[in-house]
Length: 240
Image (cartoon, rainbow, N blue to C red; front, side):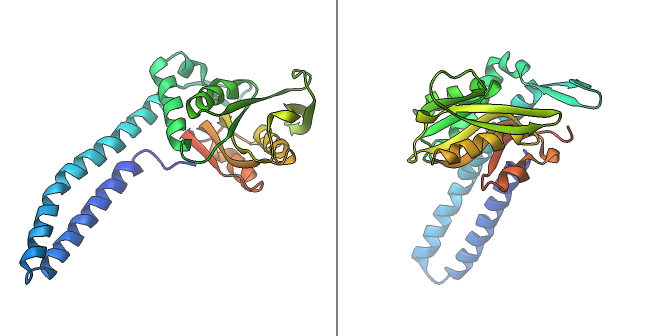
């Protein structure tokens, strides 16, 4: 899970204040040494510039996250009474928000050693494939039963009312792969859990599971943690 939006700037402000206090202490220690005093005095002049750059970077990220969050429509009582449905089609219809979503996922995983991205049917394709393209790695679709033409590995999992089955091509992943699972939303985590289990059965390592939306109250984070998989969500909403 990612930290709440205001934490970014708060973290930077605290860090800069600590650096300033350390610098003052070091200057006090350097009073008897002209060279050190000159060095620390010169260093101190850079703090406003460094501070400004860091705050600008973190504020830009907060603005991107806010853009993403505000682009997601909330539909009450859908698909049933009492549920707040988070609709990502409005995000997809906003080029700036869609671009920000892909950019932030790419930035988060570009140095994590990912060799394959697995996206779950169907909305996972909308985010997983662009991220895979940007990272220069292969994209592997996980589909509902009967949709893939070659030899598949299948996994049946429980739904609220019944069961469903997911499938993945057996030759799409090797034991040498480091796999990132991408989907639009993490709620209870049943679909992603089944996907993770299939990837593990094929011998690959799951490095993380990434989502545009996280609903932390529904237990998906804990469910994936039991499989040894950490999760990362760009934005979070309370409740259902």
